[in-house]
Length: 287
Image (cartoon, rainbow, N blue to C red; front, side, top):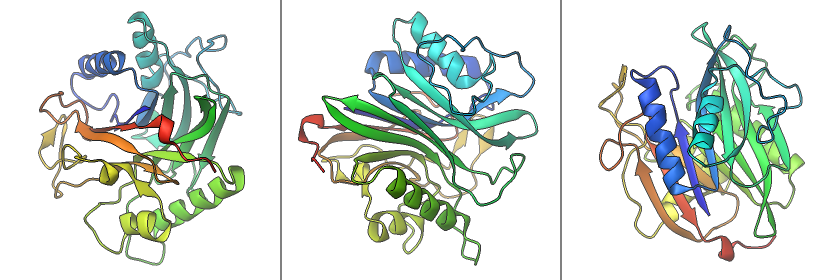
């Protein structure tokens, strides 16, 4: 089973259309089973997209309006023209830069059986960029029902109101209630550096017991998903970090893990790099 996660920084990059084409070409070549995207934007006042009768689009219960320049919609349509079909869903999280509806999206080569769009931040209005959400799907792969969530969390804060911890605990609690005794994979930008002890990453892996697939790979390739050099329109002033993960609530057999779109074998297309992971689907444990 091939998985990919990428914070796209969509429509905020120079040469955005070219970068989206590179992304589509890569996806068409790799044929991932499930892909999670974060920072999926659409202009607030763009015309609505014709998704009502789209057999590949799985709407949220509140049916948020998909606009014609929704990055996930444009990408999915581009892939269709390349002969690659993906089922997909999008969940709006907040208003970005007063211009965009920003959300998380998830693509699947397998039909989506159920969709879960969840707000995991506490009492944040839609116009607040601190409002966070996740998009989850249920699919069946090799007669095994599995859940995949595209996630975008806030960073760790050493203060009483720790947004990351509040969001993570709310997400964990909701997943336990919705999906008891089911295999779950979380993909996304967790804003939790793997080399900072006693903070978000340790809470995820040591306190909560989730498995970092990159760390389980025989020989993981690449080091950082959030580089320090200039990517597109943003120059990162922080130290490079690994903050994007594919996490499992069970211990999977990881065949490979590689950080991509880092400007080496694959071009830079965002202010984040992507993470692709291959799991041995035949070795999935049964709960």
